[in-house]
Image (cartoon, rainbow over all chains, first blue to last red; front, side):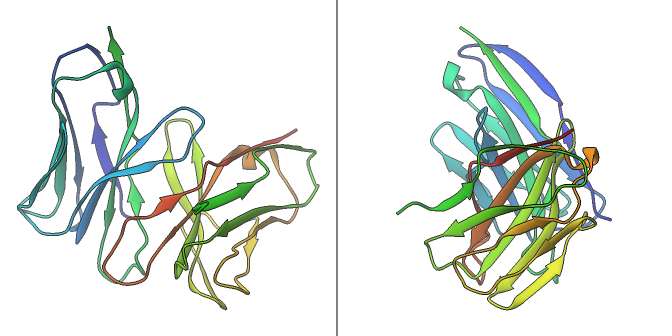
Length: 112
Length: 113
């Protein structure tokens, strides 16, 4: 089946640093989404991307839908302690009834 | 507006027992899905529904049943629990159409001993 390769698996950064993570796939996706999961909670949608090449921001978060439609990245600028959590990418391809394929997550830790 | 509500939050089962994980949404969403989350595995789709009366299998459906008799509710049934079903289960819903922003519940942590 389809798989998403998300990297890095984990990151330990200093407060104030910028963060970058990405997802790649061997398959084409029509939609890329980025979710954040806090401990003991369900994932929360951060950014949705619908067009190849699209660059979208949400506060300190910026995400891009790759031109080839096989990759996406998420950047977080000036990290703060509440950015701690697991970030998941998810892709949706045509004909899949709207179902999402998830990456395995990037665990972000921020040192104050 | 409660969003997606899952019950119970925690459950311990013995091998062979059956149980139903409840999921309800109050947003009139057409699509509902069940995922399981295991360490290092991300979220994997168990079953999904694109509307009342319509369900289909996802990536890991074995050992689970679903039904969708109303728009609001999408229960997940474990027929005969096995230790391999120890996991965190998430229910999610979204509107039909091009909006792919799934809203997730807060999860049910299930342990099978």
